[in-house]
Length: 247
Image (cartoon, rainbow, N blue to C red; front, side):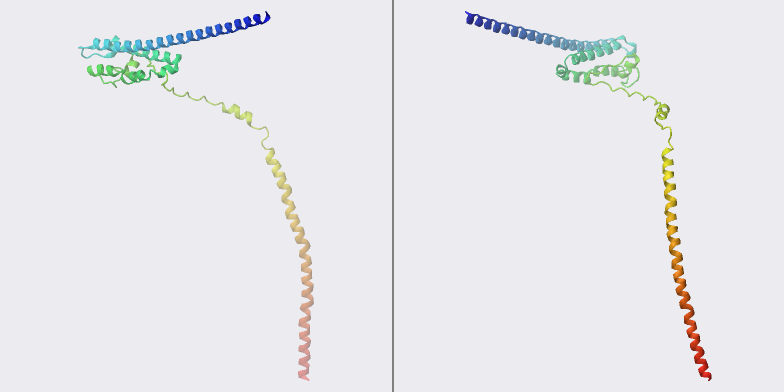
């Protein structure tokens, strides 16, 4: 009886674990489905934004068709083109923020926008005889004319100019570092020099004073003994020889 109960409990435990696993798998499946739905929504948003942008260029072309001496800054459709362009770039940015890996899969579409987004606008400018580099009339100049900022792709942000460095507060910092008594070390060096300087010459002079008189006295004694003897002997010989010659 007890064995049958234990078997039943074990079976119930296994069934509960399997059910929990099935629930987790279903939840994970639902999560994957939800992610797929959101990813598709972001992709569709990009598609609609691209279509809206190119549609706005078609409307601009229709607005200026057949007109002479017209400036794009005077045409409302020109500003709409720039607004649609920014909405398109914003859609790419939303996908990049949601899933950067999926964003890599739309690289071809991104390159197409970068290379061809303004090709039709250039054609309109040429058709109207407007130079594409003319300030305030076409392409880059239109952004400034309408007071708008051109968005960039999320992985190609424009580098901002570095901020000017703040003026350093040098005087206060330097005063804190300077020691209170900077002349202590030089004084110690002067004391050492005063002690060493007189010792060496005194020792040398003492040695010279002791040795000099002894040598001089010895030399003088030798000179006194040798000097008178030689001439006296010579004089005696000379006297003897002289007297002998006379006698």
